[in-house]
Length: 255
Image 1 (cartoon, rainbow, N blue to C red):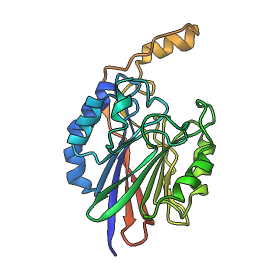
Image 2 (cartoon, rainbow, N blue to C red):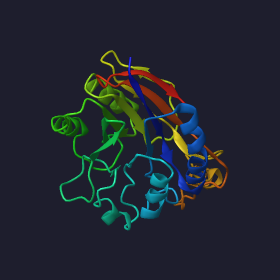
Image 3 (tube, one colour):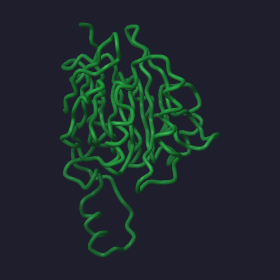
Image 4 (spheres, helix red, strand yellow):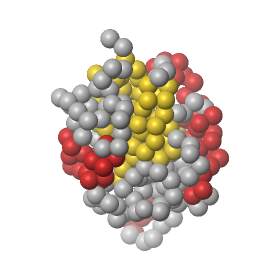
């Protein structure tokens, strides 16, 4: 039975996240032997956004595609980069005319994988309907190999998306909340699912931010400038095995 493997790493947070991903990728690739390496890079530049140089460093390190999220446009220098045809995708459910694209194809070993990025709407910014959005995108995609990064806050919305696309995509992985959940599973239709992959970033911290700064905010309610913690980074991600013939997932493992 022919299979291929996807290695996906969760939200990269600031310099500690970048450093641990770049230093760990060779070991992770050697250990898991993935066909595709995908990362979420939306927090990679000082905790919010991504820059062209950071994106280039990830591609040079062996990343095949980069997904983003609600902080996709925090760094203005990324705007033009998103329109240069590289395999980096921002949320698809944004208004027409927004720089970049919401999905792309990457091909490795004759497997053509569609990589999609969507943002949820619950407790998030104003985005178009992600459920209608994914239906429209799927109507345009011919390959059965489809990977969806659903960047959302609400667990219920993420689970609902998993069931909405069950049997239609190879994998739905949740990002944004930075805490890895323990609900990885293969849905009956052959779709790998996890509510949140977690982050690649500093620990100890509060979702990657300096814990003292966050504690001050909670205890005083005063406006506070968030700062990425300076502690060493940790890796969170998943490894997903998919059938080469059908695009249906057969296993998902947290790392």
